[in-house]
Length: 271
Image 1 (cartoon, rainbow, N blue to C red):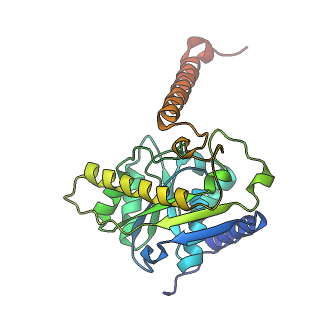
Image 2 (image 1 turned 30 degrees about the horizontal axis):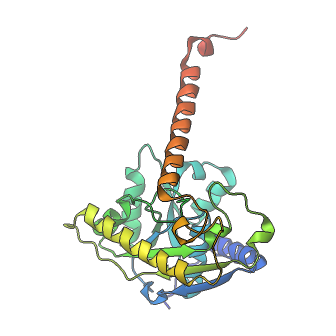
Image 3 (image 1 turned 60 degrees about the horizontal axis):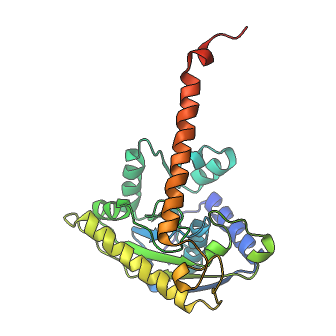
């Protein structure tokens, strides 16, 4: 295994994560680990069924070959005092949604240096626990940097922390989290981003299907199981409608806040 320069913040964060997962007594299974390169850049394109996939994938990759994954994270996360300091110390990449070009260029440069870049091409948690439509950023990064895309499916992580669900601490103990690392997908500069993204989505769904099929816990009637497999999770259409309604509410709230801030009354001097 090649020697890598020490990164105390990353090593400490991995240690804290391992301690937490050990306290929860998480079980772990992984397939396709041979698809993780020991050296060189690659884009890890992951399913997004819960909020801890980034930490779980970091954990699994670290255990396998001690490689570090740099994730693209929102500016909102970087703006939080403690979380932001941790993200910077781990050399994750800040994404400003209003001007994402800088983050894109930084990610391409990191890939060319031989880094692993982690992305969630669904751009949000899928509450149906099926793979949503993907953004094309993962394949475009890979094509520009000349590196492969490695599809990664995670199953079981949604039972720890996910959208629209309060999970009691005792229900996190002993959960199994399974990983599937797919074969690297080559994306050439001249390839259609739409076609490459569609192929990536198909591969991610197939990997997720296999993990769900082989999962050792029966999900029939469970909130964390997709509806088509006998669970009570929202269907993809129901989840999409709920996401659209949530986005509309947030847009209305933002508009109302901006209108209030720009009103003459808000600018009048207080006596």
